[in-house]
Length: 346
Image 1: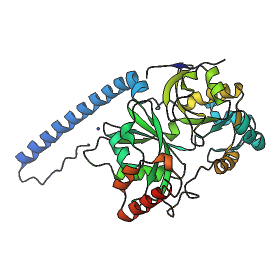
Image 2: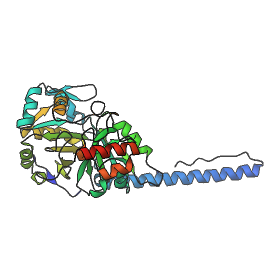
Image 3: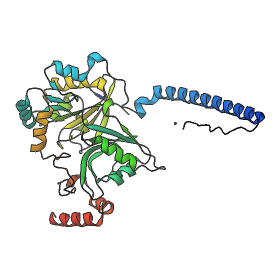
Image 4: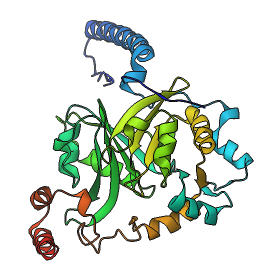
């Protein structure tokens, strides 16, 4: 049985040359330019060498998701395809030819879903918490390392864009987004980063894989993998582990259910983690069955239930918002709508 153990977890110079009036001036300026170029090359080389040295010793702690791609013979999608799964051209596992069995297992046993096609953003920098607090509906300022939440990205009139699943980590916040909205939300967030803001946004979708474990026996699976300390913890609680020397982050809950778990890992670890979960009795579930499950579980999706026609409360996303914050962030008309809707539901 495979076990998982807990772990502690630059502007280019442009020289503008002007016309020279005398040969002496020409010689002087040429000499100055050569001096500057030499200094720039030396500085750049030194900096690159330092960066390389720092990266080799600290990348696991500072950027835990920037790992080398897996060997070609251990590619996860190749492995599941060889086992009979149907994979789309976009790299989405559509079905394992067991949709009915998987849907039944969600209700009665345990299923595992590959959600690696969902977007994943790493928001870092000293101002990351305040930035996300101002840009989404949840109260990020009350959260600390190891906690998490759901939050909603909205338009200026509080219309829904997408729901994000957030993990608060030591040096960053991880956001899981719908595949359709990740690019647009990245552009939107970058647009609102001002010059003095200490915020960086990195799309780590291609550098990571994401699995979701759901069903009545998901806690039993976690206990068997020595991850029982997460069982019973609040939604969004997340901790770092390693499997066979590779980092895996596990969080309580997932995109489709408050119960269950989410597992984030490098592509190099994906095949090993997937097979371990299957060995514990998890039934694989593809995206076709996932769509049916999403609807029956009442999970709204962008472009379907989440549109410009509804604000966050009309979409029923009560657990993803802080009402006091929404009043401050939205316009008068939206604020009035939300206020009356809140009164109606008290």
